[in-house]
Length: 154
Image 1: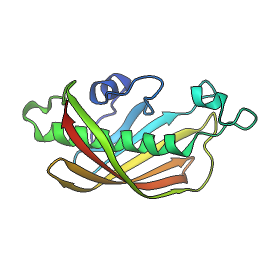
Image 2: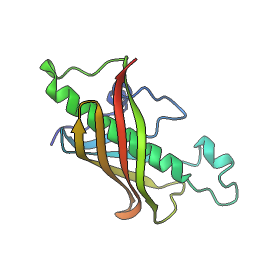
Image 3: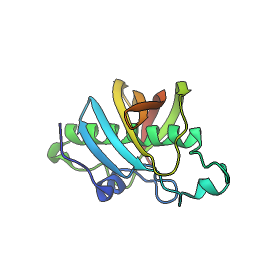
């Protein structure tokens, strides 16, 4: 298991920026196996203005996106571990979401929640990656999905 990756390290590995960066930090990771990330959900999130004003709930598609970003981080740290010197992938590497299977939502995510997201590597062949991902709040499952992505240099 490796060290925490702070927001600067996340920004080095993902092309996403506010308001679409949905991972605040990496809590733990093991290249080629799994990663655990954190997203602190606040009332200041732009999507809460319309989803829903009288009962703010994080949209399910954004929970899926947070799981996809977490999966991309696992792909990135795994690739780094395989590269000489452990360098980061760089500005030209992008992980594209190619599929979501078996998505399930168990309970709402609301302002004040800390979303703990885990992605486990299920399969990696050439540029295609498959992950089993879960999202939890206070140890309770809120969502799960199988996430697929591909890596491209752009």
